[in-house]
Amino acid sequence: MSEGHRVTHRSTRPLMGTFLSVTVTHDDATAAEALIDLAFEAMTAWCAEASEWEPEAAVSRLGRTPVGEPVALPDPLFRLLLLAQHVWHDSAGAFDPSWLPLKPLWPMRGQSSPPSAEAVTAALAEVGLQALELREGPHPTAVKHRTGLHLGLGAIAKGAAVDLACEALEAAGATSFLVDAGGDIRGRDDGTGWLVGVQDGQGLHLHSRLHLQRGSIATSGSYEAGFEHEGQRYHHLLDPRSGYPVPWLGGCTVIAPSCALADALATACFVLGPDAGRALLTRYPQTAALWLEADGTETASDGWPSSNDPVALPPATGFC
Image (cartoon, rainbow, N blue to C red):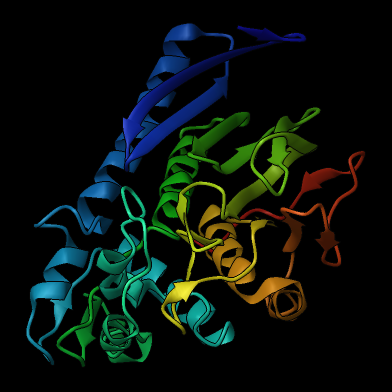
């Protein structure tokens, strides 16, 4: 289809439990399709190593491996886990990929009441990324130091998939593209930029639009899944430090150079809330966040763009 004088080509395919879209601007339809296929190949290969649902994925093998035994990691997964460790440390555990033992307690679909306090306490004993050791070198490895350590990368893996797709596109010479993994978005356009919407705090309406020239956007919102019990709303965004859903309702959108970083920080900043979230962002240059609460309250960090300012961030370096 056309956007002004530009011709865009888009494909949407199911992957990673959602729908992923790749859009490129190109005068040649055949060349555009080849670029799109290249992006999806990168994301599919990533899923084979980073999904806890794939038994032979590296992240799954780590969960089955005995304590102290090194597990070889592909370089992209190693780099992503390094980033995850940094955000986990800097957020004091508000972002924690070792949250997976809590997941069975909060299925959300068909759930009508919270789990027992005893079950949450038992699961929390298996949570904490301090039990993961990453060893650099020509052949990077991971070692777990707790039997129950199991990683669930749902709060960062889609962002990483987007980054890998964008890296593949840029390596192939693409200069105008947008990759969207269920709302985790990264784009580049040297012209007017891509128009990206931000949902309101209830997830019902469009709050605002951003002009994305270069950079990434990710949102964590409480409105995607949940249930009511005795007048209280329980949603799918858990605080891995308490084992319970974060008490406030709404969404947090983060912009950052890479989508993996935006994805992780959106989760951490949602869990932390505006005050501690803004302090966290000072550790990550070229990032900003907007908190939109369900009651209409809005809080923006320093650097959040106005509706007239384009998002034009420095090129990402890997997942950072």
